[in-house]
Length: 241
Length: 316
Image (cartoon, rainbow over all chains, first blue to last red):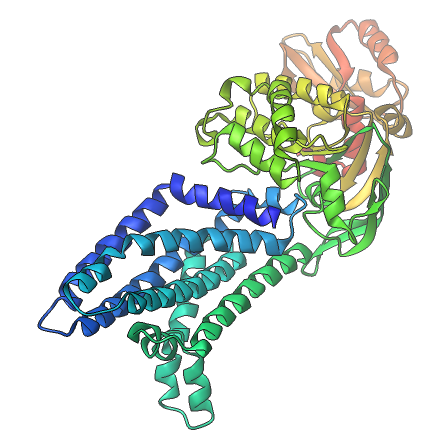
C-alpha cells in the first residue's frame, strides 16, 4: 500500500504540474458546457429528460478524457526511461499499475466534480432528485474507471504514447460496438455480446436513468480489474522478454 | 558479494548475453568493458533486477536475485545509460521520491538528503526543475537517485556518456568518492575511464566473458603482442621504402604498415612480438634517420582489449 501511495502522489502531482491535466480539465468542462447548452437545453423537455441527455453527452466526453489521461501513464515512463527507476526499486508491478490507475481516476473524479454545477442547475429549476444526479455520476465514475484501466493496459504495451492512445481508443470503441453487433446475432451470442457492451446496456439503461443495478456495478468493476490485471501481466512479461 | 553463474539472456531468439559466470567481492570496483552490443547493459540490468535472466543464477549479498528480486533491489543503486528522471519534478522532490520508493522513512530521508546533495554537488540546484538542468547536472541527479538509499552495491552504466571533458573529470572524482562507501560496477567502452577507475575488469564481447582480472593481469596475459609507432623525419626526397627496410630489419619486428604523415614526419606502425623500442631507436640512429617519436601504437590495455574483442572490429 505504501508504494501505491508514493506512485499515486507522484502521478497526481504530474497531472497538476503539467499542461496536459489542465488542458484536459478545461476541454472537458468546455465541451460538457457546450453539449449541455445545445443538447440538453434544446426544446421543451421534462427535467428528468434534460438530466438523461446531460449524462448521455457527458458519458462520451468522460470516455474520451479517460483515454487521454491514461494513455501516457506507463508509455511515457518507458519513453523517458523513468520506468527503470520503478523497475529497480522494491516495488511490485501491481503497485505501479494500481498507483498510476488511481491517480488518473482521482483526476477524472475532480473533473467530474467540477461539472456538477450543470445538473445542479437542472435540480434548482426542475424536479430531479439529488440521488438521480448521484447515480448518474456514480455511473460516470465507474465508466471512466473502466476506460482508464483500458488505457493503462494499452499504455503498458508500448513506449509510444500515440500508439497507446490508438490502442485504448480501439479497445473502447470495440466494447462500445458490441451491443450493435449483438443485434445481428442469434441467441445465445446475442445476449452474451450485449451484456459485454460498455455503454448501451450498463450505462444508458441504468445509471443514465437514475437506476443502480448491481450487475452494472459488477460489470464495470470486472472490466477495470481485468484490464489492470492484463497491464500487470504485460509488465511482468516484459521483464522476461 | 555478487555471484553470477551461467547467466544468459535472450531477446526473442537472439542471444544478448552468456552464458557468463563471475564474482564481485565486497568493496571492489569492477569495470565491464566491451564494444557497443557486447552485452554490458544487459548484464547490468539483470544485476539491478530490471530484467530477468533467461537462465542461470545471480546471488547478491547471499540473496537469490531471481527468486527474491525485491530484497536485492533494496541493496542496489542503479544508474542506467539514460538517467531515469522525472523532468517535471525538482531535484529535491525527485530524490525524495526515489528514497521513498526504496522504503526510507520521512525522518531517514530528511537526514540523508543533504548528504546526497552534497556528494553529488547538487545543493545549489536542489529546488530547480530537472527539465531545466544541463546534461551534466541530470547525470548527477541520476547518481543521486542511485545512492540516496545508501545501497551496498552501486551499478553505473556508462556514467560519463555525453558529458563534456570538464564534466567527465567531475564524474570521475565523484566515482572515486563513491568507491569509499560502495561496491561499484561500472560499464564503459572508454578504456581510459575504466582503467583509471576500476580495480578489476571484466571484458565482454558478443555476450561472452573474454577476459577478467586487473589491468596488469590482462596486459600480462597478452604481453607477447604489441604495436609500436615510430615517427621519423625523412629527407625531402626521402624514400619510404628505405626507412621501411631499416625498420623491418630490427629483430622482433614482424611487419611494417604503410606510413602516414603525422607531427611533421612520417609515422610507421610496427607489429612486434615483444617490446623492442630500444632496438628500433638504435636502428634508426644507425641509419642516420631523425627520430621524432617512438611509442606503443596504442596503450597496452588498448592492445589487450582489441586482441580480446577481435582485432579490426575494435579499431574501427
